[in-house]
Length: 195
Length: 391
Picture 1 (cartoon, each protein chain N blue to C red):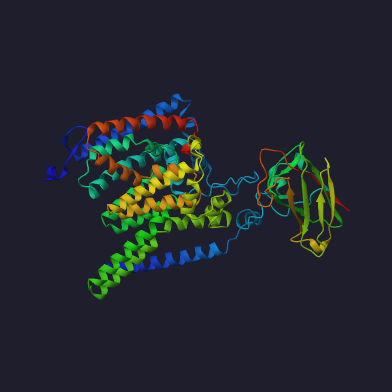
Picture 2 (picture 1 turned 60 degrees about the vertical axis):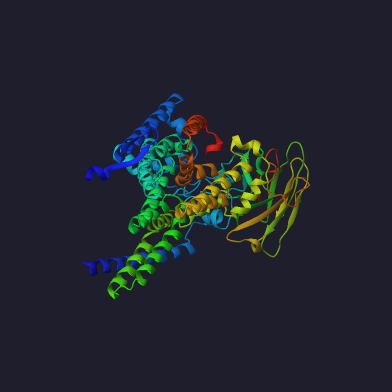
């Protein structure tokens, strides 16, 4: 009886050890969705895009953020943007990212902004990756529009990635990561694919 | 003979006479039931029991009890809304209770909390008899009922089951019941992340026990038996936690989803001592009533650590360890809920109970009891109105 108990404990210990080793392996090799990886593991997105099953359809040539739910906007507005309002989606942080799905034949992306009503803000927008990495500057006009040339060399994972650095005029901007939540900020109103 | 064994010789201070141990349990449970009924009555008069009692984490637990764990978070930018950070034992038992009784999620959760509060009462009396044989149990029973933060044991929070399992762990450890200790530690770790903090201490105790038996010069067969037994117990301990990790992998593909969602909430681990020092330097004591004061939270953490030190001085090592590391781990991830993690911790209550027991004049004890009653009513009122301080 004692020997039988001993064998049971021995086998149970072996099973448990193997199970824990398996879990350790799973911890080191998570098998998550792309969205989970961006949101929780690499922290390159601060929202959650609920992609429909299969490949999501190509977006239309104009994406208007003033009338789009958060869950859908997150396909494009990956990091640092607030929920969309009629003005579009406001900057929440000083550094933001925008992801635009690749569409064949597109030569430039036009971004349309709304400035805050009381003070104007400026932003530098740069295309990430590729041989041609243009940077454009958003000036203080009330309804600024900027056009950024794109090509296939900058397509990564079937998308173009843009980085924004917003200057709201505050003196401490060097160390600032959160924009003042009490005031309005520059907002991205729409994206247009240009051919 | 049986009668004499059953007789408990410590006087119940409130009654001033020798009573049986069963009477102590009976009085304690009657008082707890009375408190439960009073809380429910007050809640029903404050706009409905569920609306008045279910705030903060209760909503999360209700979500898990009723619908299980989320497959994905909601999408509000900068605000992660997934319930993976909540460990499964409490919602799982509550969901089973809901199935068995047909109660709605809130009431099954409340039932589980109340049953565990009964468990806290009984095990804590057992434990105090074991570890503090000269203490007055009457004081402890009254303290348990009047202790203001004991209110959490009646809410749909994991406080009650965690408290019960922690006391069970302490009791089994004190009795040197190895299997009971390991199972309690395992269940504790399936209740809350801080339950894992019992593992190092229990592991040390298991292998020290093995070392002792090996030194005793046993024959080869008994030695082999001891080694395999201790290894088996050691491996059994994290089973509950491991099953939760496996479930998270099945659900979202990441066994550490519970930790990653906490990090996305801004609860990253930092040096807790630096965090406490930073809190002390905030100079925002005025915000304490809104639950936003860093100084206040840091002082509470220090107070809790002081009680842990006091318990260590009295050689209650496991108690001291569990209280200190719980506070430090909680504070390292941010000062949210430090009031609850400290004051509703049964080990903290044991320490404060020792202090109450040390006070001799009846008039001071009565004054403290009155104050506790008033504070309890104040906290309950605050809870009804969603007070940030209590979350």
